[in-house]
Length: 299
Ligand SMILES: Nc1nc2c(ncn2[C@@H]2O[C@H](COP(=O)(O)OP(=O)(O)O)[C@@H](O)[C@H]2O)c(=O)[nH]1
Ligand SMILES: [Mg+2]
Image (spheres, helix red, strand yellow):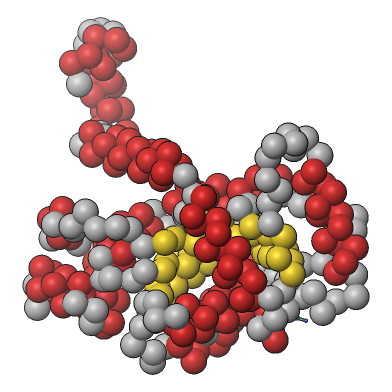
C-alpha cells in the first residue's frame, strides 16, 4: 500500500492505518509531506495537554477522562510522550496498563511517542501528528507529558488548554515547584486528594497563585481529584470545557505562527550542513580568500 492510500484509509478512521501514518510522519516518509498538504482546513480538534511530575496520576486521570469523553460521543486520541530518560523508563509500561481497557474501543486511539531526548522536549513531529489526528477525525486530542525540561513550555504552545497535575506532598514543597509548570497551567488538578494533607496543599497553591495576580484576573481553577477512584474528573472535564470556550484565538494564531516560522527555517536550512561549511571555509582560508560576510552573502 502506498502512503497516499494508507492516508486515505486513516482519514476514514481506520485505526491500524492511523498508527501506520503516524509512524510515517515520525520517520518523515518522503510521501508524507504531500499528504499533509492535502489536509482540509478542518476545525482543529481540541488539544489538551496534561503535564506534571512523574507518578502524579496523569495516566490514571486520562483513563477516566477518556471514559467521560467517549460517553459524550466524542472520539479521543491520546498521545503519551515519554522522555527517554532512565528516570521514567517504567512510565511507558505504566501508561499502557493504565489505559489498557481503551485499546479496543473504536472511538479511542492511544499512542506512545518517544521524546526528543533527555531534555524532555516534545516529539519533533508532534504538531504534524496532531494536525493529522484532527482530520481522522478526533474531536479531542490529549497529550500526556512529564513536566520536566522544556516539555511543559512546548505543550502549552501546542495545546488549547494545559492541565497541570500536582499531588499534595507537603506544604513546603510547593515553593520548589518548577516555575515553568506553574506558568503554563490553565487548570490545576490536585490529584491524590485522598491524602490527609490535601487541603493544606490546595490552600498553599491558591495562596501562592494569588501573589502578583491583578484583581481583575480570574484565578486559575484548582480541581481536586482522586483519579484512582474517578472522583473529581467530571469537574475537571467541566473546567476544561469552560477554559476551552475562553481559550483565545490569538493564542492559537500565535502558536500556528511559531510553528510556521520553525518549519520555514527548517526548510530554508535544509541543505546547510556544518561539515560542509567547515570544508568550504577551510578551502577559502587556505587560498587566503576567506571573508565571513562575503561568504554568507554568497552561500
Ligand atoms: N492514592 C492515590 N493514588 C493514585 C491516585 N491516582 C493515581 N494513583 C496511583 O499513582 C500511581 C501513578 O499513577 P500514574 O497515573 O501512572 O501517574 P503518571 O506517571 O502521572 O501518569 C499509580 O500507582 C496510581 O494507581 C489517587 O487519586 N490517589
Ligand atoms: Mg503516565
